[in-house]
Image 1 (cartoon, rainbow, N blue to C red):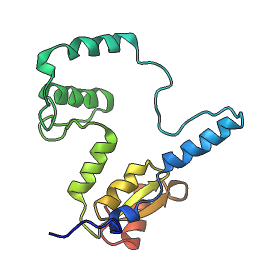
Image 2 (image 1 turned 30 degrees about the vertical axis):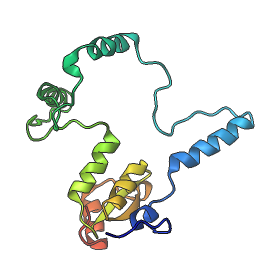
Image 3 (image 1 turned 45 degrees about the vertical axis):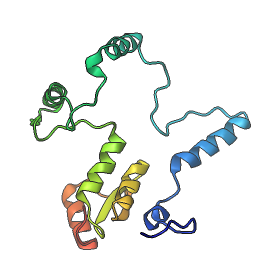
Image 4 (image 1 turned 180 degrees about the vertical axis):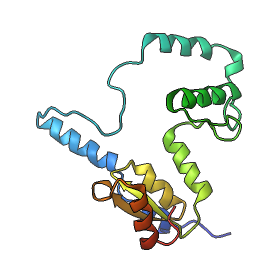
Length: 173
């Protein structure tokens, strides 16, 4: 078994770009120290407290012993059915709760695992710019190549999009 060396470089980690939210946090802190008023649009975190009725329900449910274990891997069937109904009500889209709805810890975790499951080393992923860091990080960690696509330069027409990138990149994902 190979020994761990502190000098060892990790190729996938080395390929990751700087984490944009660390950079913006430093810039925000510096601006606030200068007395500037900052409106933070970075992560989309709520700027107010969770409504009391939601906190109360969480406290009530957390007291039930049947909620103290792990969920099934795809999510609770009743929740997946509710997700499917929501998509039908909201977008008139039929989603099969058994094969097309899954529950994840969060969207970032879900996207990262989706990329690990579907990308192969050497695949090319077209990532919109701007995007959230996980769109790039997930692809890089999965071993894929990333091509940034500035949305303001791309025609909205899906036909143009498909033709343009089919010519430019082999096996885009």
